[in-house]
Image (cartoon, rainbow, N blue to C red; front, side):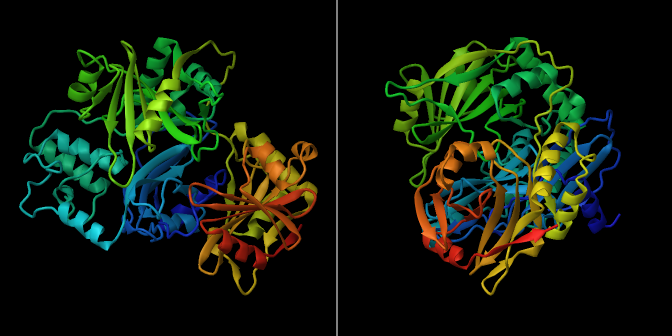
Length: 590
């Protein structure tokens, strides 16, 4: 099958997820059919996997430079019943133009501050990431490249620079390809087995083959899949009612061991805690990905559960891990330093907490570890200062949630109804008029039916009116959004204005919330928990502005009694105000 035919086929079955790339980026991935893959069941919900096969051409930046993801390539798969489609090493732009829904999350990236940042690729509920660096100036960048230059006389395969090629080098390359934090290849060129001046999955395969040909018998753990969820009750339901047939066959063994480990305990650990002033540790429900993640055992990570949390306006990651019984460490520090994890320079505080400081002179990166019992330990990670981390640890307490019997007879799959991407507004309108939800998973049909009903009740959708300054990006298509916890039913477009990209969404307001609030700022606060940094009046709109920590600016205003717009751009207040002065819209009636 030709490549574009395959992309079109995958697009047809991926209409339950939208592409929401961040504005201001040149993005890039591709699709080929998978062969000899056995599907043993017919699950009702899709299963996703994603992995970055090639980093963008540019990963080093100077302060002020815009993020450019040109050259980014991805691997991934989508499975629904016996239908299996795979993404294999193709520019992301090709998939983007064909409405294949891989989302790029750059919320951790700041081009105004030197440091190391992670960029995330998301496909359904699967996530992978890679690292980019920002330097103060050209001199700092050149110094870094000079210090990290590799020798042409190096040993083939010796990426860790210990002058030998063994299993440790293969594992290090695997971690690097997976985007594991703090994984640095001292000699990347030694892993370029394809000799094409880039590293990807093909180099990894040839590297393993070269190691095997040298009669190495050590095993290499396969890549596995994390599972994202929104609430602890979803976690316990999943642990009670999981079905391995919902997951890709290559992940089932590691996931099975993870589920068995949790169920053997009969409970999961979670966080609690608040200070004397009433500041509580809370789950980050505004996190761009799922705030709770179940993690199978990997080479660099024990089986565990991750919570993205907030405390006093700062963000933290709280991991509860199982210790691996295969290691006979004398204590947690021996386990972390010498046996399982190989952490270095753990500094003890109060004989309870072990601190690992990976900060540099440009950015904080702190981790703290402590033992819970003989079989469990906790890790807290943050990009805040050590003082903030210590303050958080003084408040943090651990709690258990029992994994009780669940009366549900159907296995739980942690996938919710996703936005639907269409090639253009006319295709989206035809889908609304037909309102056929039979091709979607049973668990999502009610959400999509309500979405279509809301659009048909209106009899129109809003669209951006192109003018001399504002142009719709036709390659990005049109997206329909079902009702969700933090999103109303709506329609989205991408436009350009004076060299900047904007994401424009028109939402149908929740009537119950609207009846209890007055004005857009109050509505957004009650409906989504979104704050307002400033309110302005422009073109007869009362506009709420939010300047997010991730560099995005949000502008919201009601366009009529029942609808409001959301304009999003990585721009300044002056730039978004300038855009709003030129912004026009109209009704597309059907």
